[in-house]
Length: 403
Image 1 (cartoon, rainbow, N blue to C red):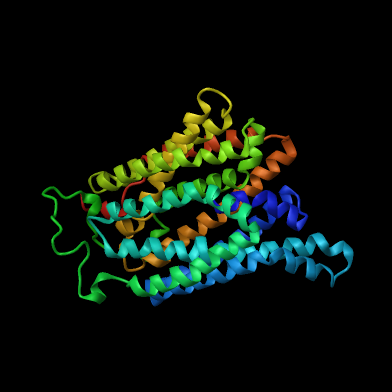
Image 2 (cartoon, rainbow, N blue to C red; image 1 turned 45 degrees about the horizontal axis):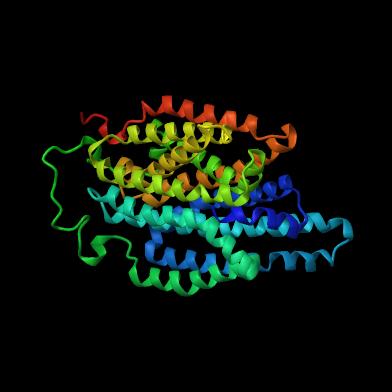
């Protein structure tokens, strides 16, 4: 969400076309995604407290690098022959994308989600839903807030502001508050006062702990992973090119950015609802709802300038984002246990990050080749439609042989 307001600026600052910038984003993001499985294993060995501080400090430093990346690229280009300017710019911003995606969206997000998964069981869904309120709020205010920071301090100043906030607020707060699991503090999951339901949902029972190799052999892992990856691909693509998409459908920059606010409201309501009921239903039905929302969102974007466009776009994206925020934090612990949670979720995060790098590049290529986003949006309708069908067989592996 945060990069959406920087896209046009970065194209001007680095002298790159939309396709070139999207390709740099693709290369950097895919490279970071390939690194994330190792980060997941580190989470299992180091614990949440060390990982949150490390990733917060790394995020702050990478934001400082991005704030000076254009100046660094111009200085570096002066060393090489004049024909190398575009290559130098591509490499520098690609490196910036790699580092920030690895530190922030990768390790920082992975750690924050997993620590909630390790502290809660019956209340895991509600804990993720409450966390999701802040995530949705952040998503909704990020484009507008960063746009205001850019107007006030310039794009470099906006990134420096975020860097100091991360280094001097987030990292110390993580060290003060985070602990890897309740057992190391002499506590238990959910707290001693939690009331166990009279009728236990079979999906809530853990019969065995799966390692990563065993998890990837299950059908459920792949259908959930593909659904999460597609959402990352699509949501990153349309936010990355949000101004260009708005122009195609006759929306001013402020109009298209302001749609994030009602979208976030729908996301919060959806998140809280599924956070409340998730312990009583099977997660495959939440996955089905998420994919149906993705279908509606893509239809809405394709028909944005029609009467159904904005409602479908706002409600579809809000529902998809709300279910995603609730589901991604609970499914791996519920399906595969807590012991190897970092390794399993790290593989999923890798897929999501790689997909989020592919999305902007695909949209940029579609625009370059066809002159419109029409064809790629049609593809974005059919993919989640197929995932809807696949959702019906996404049963919890813990149910095998246990009724």
